[in-house]
Image (cartoon, rainbow, N blue to C red; front, top):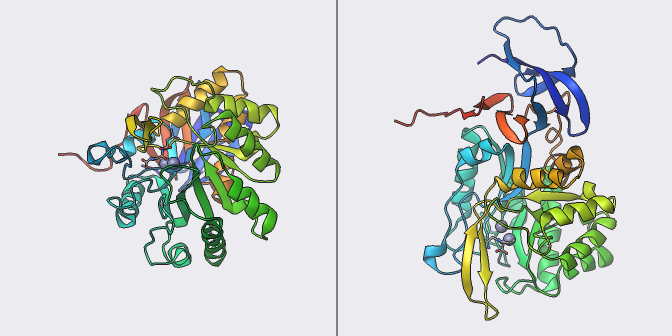
Length: 384
Ligand SMILES: CC(C)C[C@H](NC(=O)C[C@H](N)C(=O)O)C(=O)O
Ligand SMILES: [Zn+2]
Ligand SMILES: [Zn+2]
């Protein structure tokens, strides 16, 4: 596998459309994006991308690496993530979290799984904590976790406005955000708090209060599941107008579009000129439980990282410009995570590139390494 690769004649979305270009990859970086690149080095690997579009590798900011669930008892715990599911769906960067179950799912295992996904060739980060407040931590302190553990980039998913939350007070939430901010400053990380926003009436009221009453920049507040209802998403757009960013959970490949779907949310954001402030994440391997009005779980499905590609495809089919939709899983996500070299097909960026045709992924290159070649996942270890 050569150090220098040349993708020929792809229709490039960087995610802005830049037309038919060659892409020169040197090591794990993109070196040149130009027409008709001429390069002669020994063992140059040329990949013919004619007829394919090239888009930046997808960034999924909320994935249950270990699985999650449990809201209906032990047998409803969900399975852990298979990295092949990321590759076939073009996800090359992902952030792991714990969820409702912060008892039988441990941060140690989350860290180990994040390292395993890296060994498979993906780029991973994790949130410390889980739904509960005070959050579970590695070291007993949010700041120490963020400063001392390389993969920890923030805290999440902290549940608010949900019958499964720990009913945290405003002060408890404020302290978590303050600690995440300073931990991020000390370590050059985003120091964000990924909030699980439930269906509760108070929505993201706490987040608006923090913005109004404190000096903490809005960029540390990153609420997810914001397309859970139209009302909540409209609240989310108000949050974006203040300079915030919100995350919507993708439509799972098995889900029907309900009365308000993530695609409706993307259309509403686009029409309000705010699609640059919205990301999509998959909630992959998390449980998607349904409760009766007594709060008993009556059924659940399991999220899939493939929901990102599925939702992008649906939004484009609904008429949104492809590059506007691509922003929500590339540069917008990189902005939230403060990943300076991710999310674009441009010189100096990590060579995370998907080649696809009609949203069928054909090639996946992650930090310059092919993880999928002509539709086939490259297995790093021979499974005997
Ligand atoms: C957005 C909706 C549909 C799904 C959402 N999933 C989680 O929060 C993850 C889950 N609880 C787990 O820990 O595995 C939910 O339950 O509200
Ligand atoms: Zn959640
Ligand atoms: Zn989740």
